[in-house]
Length: 139
Image (cartoon, rainbow, N blue to C red):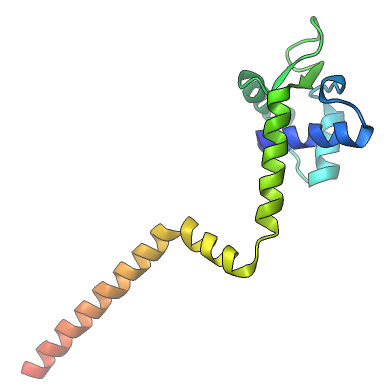
């Protein structure tokens, strides 16, 4: 579970109910946990969810809809948070719908350190084999 999943969840709740982002309120409670499980199959703890909300709040992605509701209650999505959620959701959709050559290219790019290590190991193994061959040819 990360901040983006929470923001996307709230955005989708807004869209499903036909409400603007500043009219949808939520609390960090068991109801939210159930919604996240139903939508994404995620099971964060209440404490983990509170930490995620704190990070979102510090980045101004969430704000309190009204005073006196407590630190993790009466929250709503900000315009900035809505933009982040929309952008992240779009990038996830694009990432899922890539063609196979693009997926392979991205995999190689993401794991280039591993490929570099593998290439180095192969080169060293080839060097060792050639040295051993030369030694056995001379002897």
